[in-house]
Picture 1 (cartoon, helix red, strand yellow):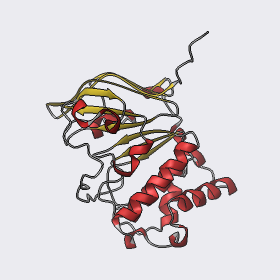
Picture 2 (cartoon, helix red, strand yellow):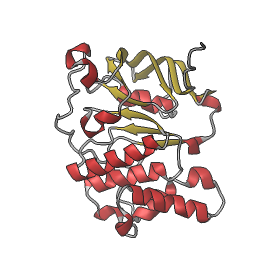
Picture 3 (cartoon, rainbow, N blue to C red):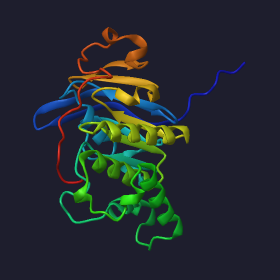
Picture 4 (tube, rainbow, N blue to C red):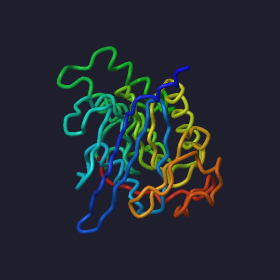
Length: 258
């Protein structure tokens, strides 16, 4: 009887190295996320988590190794509507006057290109805003929102392109409990619909039940790749001292939308 085939890789890092100034940040990282998987990238501050995900979308150039998205080398990849990216804790508009709907609609640009938005585009934006529970505030300025609501806008912006893979960098950091629950529900819906997800997390928190696999980085190296920590026990994760479902959130960071 033939063995079941492994789902195709959606994200693939092979031997990835990167530096920040003269300091090595990634030291030969191998990381694969298959279609339909929810993978958490864990590690202490400075372990290389954010650098790894930013290298996947081309924001950080590698000094060695390769990146592929949907089987295509990053340098040749052009289908960015298939990828939804939520950057590390920022404000939704960096102080620029804009409504929630305008910010979320900007996430649809990877599909509309230079054409005017059509009915399907408007419906996708409405659906993304609804998913994060902000329909009644769609015309409000993002500058009037709380930190948790800002994060919900960023996630809605990523969902507006109806991506096949979501890459999220610390989506729960500095977010109030009510917004954490809404974000977890939103993510559950995406996963149920077949989305592939790569999450940078400081702690598993409300997302722990969704995680298929955990990858732990330490000093830019993969120290663990396997079942989530809750399934194997904390002590099985060498070099990781920040994985705990009830750990306190990081302080809120603010900055320009990237």
